[in-house]
Image 1 (cartoon, rainbow, N blue to C red):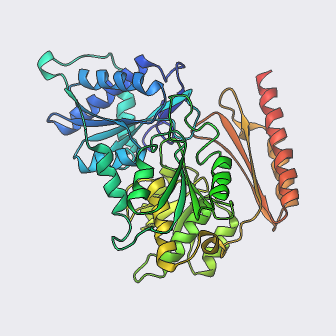
Image 2 (tube, rainbow, N blue to C red):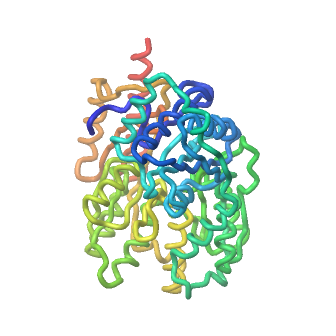
Image 3 (cartoon, rainbow, N blue to C red):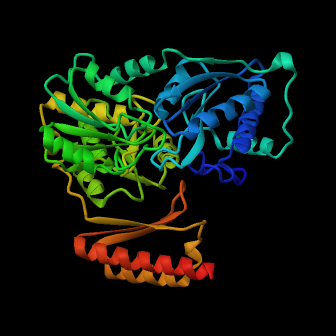
Length: 453
């Protein structure tokens, strides 16, 4: 990359509402800066779509972006609450120059963020993000009154996206006879996801479909699936679908109430794809992908390529390797044959299509993969902490790696979206893995506290 980002992280700009840079004045300036870059590159009047999840702060930031873009002479089309992948799709099909998402994904309601899609429905190129950051350092100037951007609303946005989701599985397939519990995390999919599955003739039971601006991702959705597991068992459902607040992640629950995570979803889709003529022999995972996925895919002569954690890096490796399927253990799955970005609804539909085509249940489909026990502990820090500079942490990591040599692995990394250090230990023995992870997390916590004193 040509330069270092000041504001953009691995997934846009994100943080706590009211704390810089997630403030109305900065977001307005961001809209203006993005508008300036688009205006310079497009020449004619540019058009940008804005969508959001259900956080209460979304109204405020939607208005701020609208003001900034208009001041830069860019027209705005408002989508209202819309899943992140839906915004990517509509940006592409409505021929917009960019799409802007107001969301903090799986984070709690008091966080929010901004991320961008290009005209092609993909993440912005590094040079475009750097150009926006360069504009942010300049004084804000408003175009002449006759050149101000106009704002409108896309009335049929939800219906367009629903039809697109349904089109990603064969038209002859029906989900009739399947009972599905869908947990929308009180987020952006609350109205759309149930309709997709219902229109495909499944029996749908809903959770997390009453957003109030404050309850997004609160004890529900893909990050906290206990209520989904309980509901699947109570209703005798065939499976559960748990989405996150902006709809780009999904986890599934089988009829026994067992979680089917992103690694297992990748395994199911990859194996079904491998059976088709002309399939591309490879899957992109991340450093966090379970060893069990790698071994199970290898048995099918499918290679797992490991990227850095983050959908940006998964996408980069997919393009480098010329592959179509990749994703993360968290349930962020990218199916490039169907769409341009991670999409929870579409990923779930690909698994449901396999179930319908093979006449097999979800539990049976995942049974070919055995996961290694894995423990991840998030060590929260009030600010960014360079754990790599700590000798205590390095010694502790080396000690655990020597203990697990040949039987497991250790990974420490700073989150790209929130101030936490993720400590992951994986191995053959669950008790040993848990003990090692706790030991290492305590060392990271102590090193952080020492750095603050």
